[in-house]
Image (cartoon, rainbow, N blue to C red; front, side, top):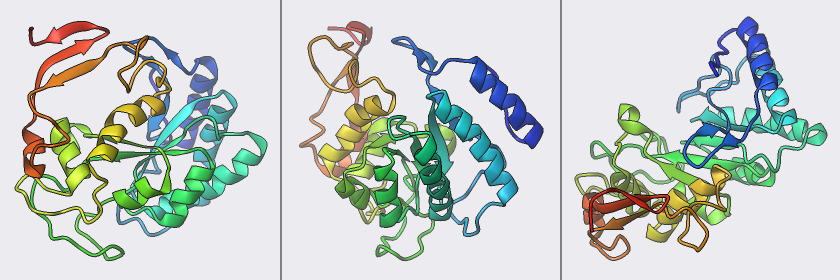
Length: 271
């Protein structure tokens, strides 16, 4: 499926694409789950976005979101700024009154400046938050919560304490670091790669581990197959050279997989 929606005309074509395809056509390895990271191209916010998007842009976005909701599609939307998040939730709450979305697990991606109010509103809609590693290439000064940061960083402890489901990922090497244990160190302890405290609100080791495993499986609607070590699941797992829960904080980034299994088969390393 080639999805593109950067103009109103392309949005109309995208509606046809959504309606002619089936969401959740996913097997154990690959498939079509939903829409994202940009449902409608012109709505591409940054962490410094302070103004609302025009009614024209939001109307085109909601046309796509409404069709997706009716067809039962999952959406993950690029939302760095709380202004964008708040504006979308305003519209999602209205949509939910006629087309329920609370079971679709729609996700706010990045959520760098999300507020406590927006977290609670998103949680009430059954939404999730997709966090990606930030500010981990170089040291940044620790900044008290509520003040501007450069770059902005998500309030992980507030998100964790709210009870909303949040997943953790690397966002690949184009934007952030691609190694998962660098991202997990940042989320768990607040440390950057040089050992400097750069995240004022780390989530803790267990919370970061759950976010990277069980919560990500939930966000993929694969919690019955992935995310925990249980009989009957797919046996996708890694054997590590160190104990993630007990190694010194700054050594988390150096953890290596010595064996990787997918579906119970060793695909890296050897016994």
